[in-house]
Length: 596
Image (cartoon, rainbow, N blue to C red):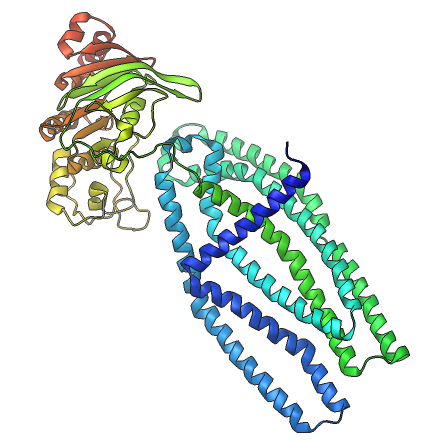
């Protein structure tokens, strides 16, 4: 078991590693911004030291030693000339280099985060802990990286000032260094403790803020407007908001008292008293012992104030910097996550092959979803998966698409475990319409093609026609009003047809339709299934449907219940068996007959 000392050392090493990670990232992706920031920090520190400490000392020494007036003029001309140049450089960097550099840095991190988000396992979205880290990484990555770069630059400036001031104290009066050491230790302890409290507070309040933000989104999103108005969800949501807000306030009360005490003015008052005593000591040296000159005492006086400010910056910035590294720790944890779904290396067969499920099991949080599923789908076969909600139908096709891997058993394609195939190539062979399909804030064309390859307008329009899409919209029409006032919000049925058109456009070897007609009227459903039949000639098709009228076109039907296959066969065979499938089909048929 690690001792507290070892834990502390490991934490400090990790913090340093997080800082170095951030600095290396900035130097790699936005080098001009990064190095300009660091070099200017040193130059500004030197200018500030000369201006506030050395200028008056040098001028007083020139006067006290009776040197020529021209010496003072030359010094002032050189100093002010360099100051003007440095100020112009600061203005240029602040107005031109920094905004472009920060945007370049942010864009680079966003691309990395997007690539990682697209690569992580689907199961990660089922973990609240991982999802919290994911959301935190995405929302805090850029602000914290910029904060660390700014804090490091400020620390470089402050440390450079302390070093220059320290050299001055050693050459003139070393007591100031001892005073500074006391203040550094005191400030580090106070600030580090305060920032640890802040981090604990933020860690505990983040999930509650997410809950509260969710309630806010629900109230304002159009998707929820009808339910909120027709049912009593508004009262429930407001009740949840009050309860969540109360938890947030309790956490703030728990931590903010101690935080405010440590961040209060008591520490600064104590520091001012210490420096006040030091100034009394300097006056004593001048008046009583006469061991220093006017230039020296003014330099030490101004240096003490400079040192005070620099020490305040260091003791304030270092704990903030260490706190920011805790956020970077979460970012690195997210970026270092290795997906469980690994790609194989084998090329996928060019034409449809047999798919075989062999004793496939799958459990979610130790709860069995699929149990000993064995089935074979022949090349070009049309398969229907039916059953009541929760039977495991959608999970089965997610396993086939390798969005998850089986807990036990294996899935074979052409006799080879699908884990052995190149993952990206394998998924390119599969077209799917998901039950919870999404329409993106993009053009109609982009929503069908879902790719950045060369234009395929004719193929996209043909896919829409096959899906039964009735709207005569140009392919350039923006969908949703997320960004465009003239965007089109499609009906549920038309949106589903766009989702179906994606699969028709892809023309994959294996086509999966998960509840493809849930939002369609019976005529549209009939037309879509005819289009599916025509578009899938020579392809393997798997469709999941609650509407069993569509299963007649299937070569084979699998009836699922509680994660198991309880019946299998074509429509006529299953109806003759008079089992669960026949019962379900007859119930739906009776419902349609009784409606007329």
